[in-house]
Length: 396
Image (cartoon, rainbow, N blue to C red; front, side, top):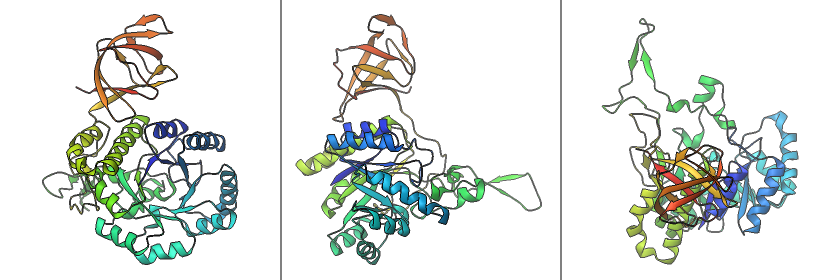
């Protein structure tokens, strides 16, 4: 079972690869359904693909926007330019995009979750059109996924297992377009579903009445975040080929922790499956240390309560402080001598420590490390960092 992680930028691609992703998915400036992600230039994409391939990992290119007539020629040029870099797959939702790629290259084609594939007949149809993998709609249960995999075992099946969820059918929403003219189906969603809504009575303009769906509150469109980690062993048993983490606009800290946790979980399921349930609480505890909304197993677990009514705010228990690269700590948020921290490594383990000394330029001792500093740190107890180790601090 492949672990597929998000790569919104070149830095995130390298983090995902180093924390255990078998493959990453990345987008270019156009056609990738994530306008607010950093996205890649062709030059950056070339570097990222070479970096991943050198470590035996794969890179899939997301081109899952729906084209307008005037964009078709530019789409063809984009496909040709990317194909020369030898990625491992194209992710598309538009059936015209599938046809164009099939005519111009032999690179495998993955059908995006935006295509809303929910049944055996549609999987067969896409297979006949030349698709190699189907990223199934998020509305399916484990039973339905198993039926599809059993009926068509010779096509790859990919499932989202972690990250933010859209309140609309597989992300096909018009709310943001209507309220802000930002099209969610072209990667520019304003997340209008996260806003707080009121009712206005026809003859009482300006008087706002909260929408009380029930005693919990008013955020009636606000989806919980998906966390299918408790069901990962079931997906493995079904024969799901790839499990996918959402988050091309999330931080490198989010990419690192989620990738490391799911990597560790898959390894446990493969090598020591009877211990998975025992290890599960500790793995979920680790996922609780990233920024997230309340978790749900979603439609996979057939949970009825997928919305969170009190607020759309994130749960933030830890702050990402620094990452170790090229023999120095790159500071992402300020910290100081005496701070109690955790060092999180690529194997998914964390160690508690205290900041004993901070050195800038190799010798100048400073009291506080500020954002964008590159520094040395001495810990108590003594810790020798490895490339891509992370330090974080509990928010009190």
